Amino acid sequence: MSTATGTLTIDLSALCANWHTVCSALERKPAAVIKADAYGLGAETVGATLYRAGCREFFLATLEEALTARSFLPDDAILYILGGVRPGEEDECINAGLIPVLYSKSAMKRWASVCRELDVVSPSVIKVDTGMTRMGLSLEDWHACVEQPEVLADCHPVLVMSHLACADEPDHPMNRDQQQRFAQVAQSARGLFPGIRCSLANSSGIFLGADWHFDLARPGASLYGFDPLAGREPAMKAVVKLELPVLQVRELGQAASIGYGAETQLPAGRRLAVVAGGYADGLNRTIGREGGVGYLGDTRVPVVGRISMDTTIFDITEASLPSSPDNARITVLDHRLRVADVSRRIGALGYEVLTSLAGRYRRIYREVAQ
Ligand SMILES: *Cc1c(COP(=O)(O)O)cnc(C)c1O
Image 1 (cartoon, rainbow, N blue to C red):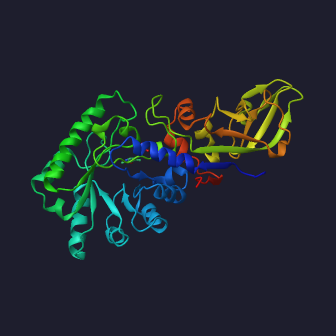
Image 2: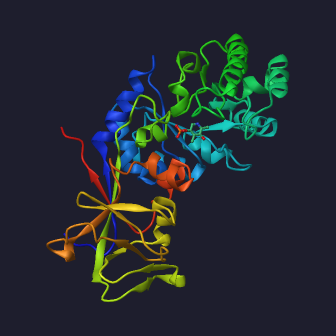
């Protein structure tokens, strides 16, 4: 099959296998983080697949993402908004049954007063900063809230959470510090609100050990095939495969310079493949500007020259000539070219590689075998 753009294949069986791997590391079922369109893989299909696999709680980043998720997930799915609720959006949040993460005193006051005005008991999540210094109540503010818990109580908190800064570095001392600070927060929260749940771990945090688990883990990346602790168990299954169609194969009759800026020179006799897909498709992030590689069949082939907006050139001299060049494709992400390896090679985060896959790709979902 020939297509004009790249094909992103998302393996839903691998997604489910990763969900089960994460679940088996935990005492209680986790939520799934499907923000940023499930890290670029498509929140609707990913969310529905995880729901069928038993997931009932989902974290989104924004009100818009959560409203969209509300439309495609069954009614009993619990949806949290990590980015919280902006002033004036409280009603919309309440009407759609969405649960915002409140991370400032002003947001808490607003939520409490809207709940009072509307005479509703609408649950919220309280986020406390234990070391990330991004969003969250400071520990001082948290303890002040606990001392005078009226506003806190009027926010109807069902979950108290924090976020780890260094979970992917298991030996980093910050992990234990944050765990201990959060354990104190959890203790005071449970003292005030019996039945409240506590949540600290993202994907990597889960594999730091049971002390980090609390009641609800929030994995994202691991579900999408990213090993939570580099080079250690468990190895997650690759979920994405990205293939780029070959537009043209050419053999150099004489030495030539390749691409914009004529930075790369190649001698006569080299065979090149130009593929569809360039930096407008996130390929600078996906395969890197230099030293990028793909696979033509079983042969590793290097990127040559600069990546253009719509095309990328590979040196395929070492590969056998595709029997039907019109259908040939070069694979740049799969189980051989894992998101983690590729991102390390280009000095990016796996998250950046995944979320830059939006591009002009045709998404194909490989269904879960029934
Ligand atoms: C994105 C996010 C997660 C998920 O993290 P992964 O490393 O992808 O598992 C969990 N919690 C918060 C607060 C986040 O922003």
